[in-house]
Length: 361
Length: 255
Picture 1 (spheres, chains in turn cyan, purple):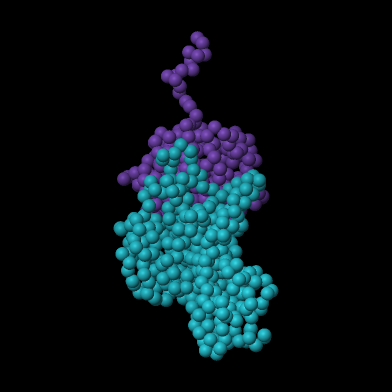
Picture 2: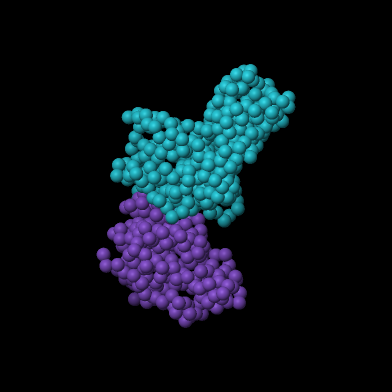
């Protein structure tokens, strides 16, 4: 039954995971996302749905537990924050290389290094450009509300299983920590072992019902075969790009300027748009929802006839590179960002728009 | 008597293990892995558990174990096999899960995963092949390399002041409440092969009975890495390795 609750984004992730029918969560505490593991331990889903919850000895162990669970066809996930997600990169590369479905949540905090526990979006490059070694992509979803935190658990798992590819929810510390109203999805049953064997005929579940053994591996020493595997991965990525690009647009048709931002910053930008309009500046908003695949074509079309684009991020300028690739040099593209865990106000964004674009025109 | 009178089913005393693939192994002639693989295949077969067995292979010489033993496998990143086995054990509690790891995998890069999986008492079997050297990468020093032992990265012999002491990971695992059976065996004589098989069978039976973590260390040779003939390597192992890594059960839980 549909249920409206008030909770943190991190708590919504835990509730949504149980309700999706997730089979296993493996995590390690790190601020600002520890509520995911805490909420799961408090809800004791192993008593109700049978979901397994393990506090691992490290982020490295946790992502390898996810790799192991995913290799058996189970719907498994982990969550962490920036320094912990760096530790997981090796495992993520293995999961992607082995074409396994899994869900990874990064509630980003400021870096580099141990950095700060305040919000950030500085892991954009890591999430969308690979992160670990080798040529691979994650499907990267950027929630801007607690509702999307809940919804993207289901979407992330559905896409992961549709394409046999890991999905990442790339949230920032704001959306992880703030409380909002959220409609939780209905409880779905976990798949039975028989259903998993049927749905995932490649899974290392034990040979029951099969004569041939299943081996999940990313190792291939023969170069010609390894290139074929890489080509298969790339073909999958092109299919995902064609089918799964998601974004939100607000008033882009009549605008003179575009503000492009993702996650919680897109909401601040939307407020900035209202303030700008009070001053007679016509602004449209584009919010990429999938950071990979990136809404390149949508941005290119929306940018036609505009006077300039301001990319607003909680980093030194990362997504702006993909925006520039989308529009080439057809119009000015400027960046405004705060770092170290500082969140810009709407009026700061309007000032940046005026100083970096309007005053230069 | 004609040869056909001898080759009859009722006269058969030995056969290749049903679960061991008839392919050429990549292991060097004289290596212990082939014998240990054979024993694992026999034990899985004899216990009738192949349909619910999942092996986790390491990074190291045994990385291709999945090409030889005909059960389902997951290939781990270096050292992470116990974390992977943990997940399979928790998510498929009726399955039987084993890891097959070398000394670098188990007691260097994967020490944390090894200790914590055993400390949680995961119902898994850890097979630990200790040949005191990194075979796959060309004979570098391992955590278990003996003092004075020459390797590619200890060319004048392992020194305490530079390299510390040989790590007896199995002795550590014995102390953990999560382990139910910890034993150290070898496969250099027919008698030892039989003992190792019995140890493996006991370990797999423990996993079936969900008694906790079982660890079977097999002190092994790496004649290529040690730069010896297979025969000489067996002698060297008996003379030097068993002093530091004595054979026998380290822990056998009552229940």
